[in-house]
Amino acid sequence: MFAANGFDLVLVARNEARLNELAEELRATNKVKVMVLPQDLGKPGAASEIFRRLAGTPISVLVNNAGFGSYGPFAESSLEVQTEMIEVNMTALLQLTHLFLQPMLARRSGRVMNVASTAAFQPGPMMSAYYSSKAFVYSFSYALADELTGTGVTLTTLCPGMTPTEFQERAHVHMGGLWPMTSARSVAEAGFKGLMNGKRVVIPGVMNQISVFLAKRSPARLTNAIVRRVHKA
Image (tube, rainbow, N blue to C red; front, top):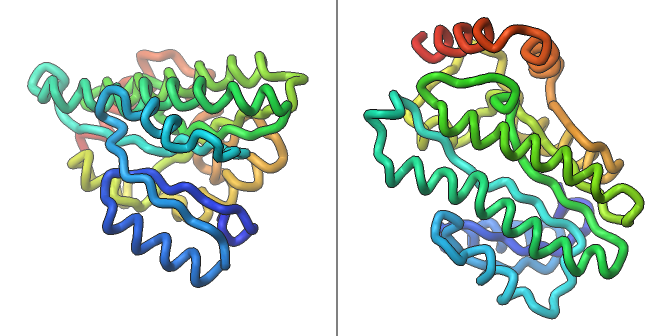
C-alpha cells in the first residue's frame, strides 16, 4: 500500500531472503527505493540497532506491525517463547515508537501506526500473554495519540480481527470458519487510509467493529467465557 502510493520503504524482519524478494518486487512494480534491514525484534537491543542504522535517513512514517501469538495453557507454555513474545509485541514497539518520535517531533511532522488487535478488548484464555500484549499496545497507543495532539505527529492504532496470514501457523491455532475473516489487503487498505487521515483507532470490518462494541460493554467474565469456548472449538 505504501509503495503503491509512492513511499520509499525500509523493510524490517528476520528473514533476509524473503525481504530481498519483496524489495525487488516493490522496486520493479512501483519504482520506489526499498532498503532491506534484517533484524530480530525478539532480541534485546534490536530497536536501538535499527534506529542507529537509519541515522541520517528521515523517517516520515513508522509502522510497528511485527508480532506473534502462542496458543496453549500458560503454565505449560515455554517461558522463552512467552518472553520473546513480550519483547516483540510490546518492548520493541515501545522502543521503536520512542526513538523515531524524537526526530518527528523536532520536524513537527510524522505518522506512527501501531498494530494491536481486536484481542485487545477482552481477556484471552489459552492465549493470555498474547491478548494482554495487544491490550498494552491499544492502551499505550491511544494515550500517546492524545499526548501528541497539536505536535504535527499523529498516532493510529490498527485493530484487525482474524486475518488469513502466517500468524495462525506460528501460534499453532486454527480459527477458520469460527469467525468471518478480513483479507490482509482489506486490513492494509483500511489501516493506510486511517493513518493518512490521522484517525486514532481503525477497526477493519463490520463484524470486528460489532465484536469490539459488544466486548467493551460486556462483563469480563462473559467475554472471557466466549473467547475460551471459541479457542476450545
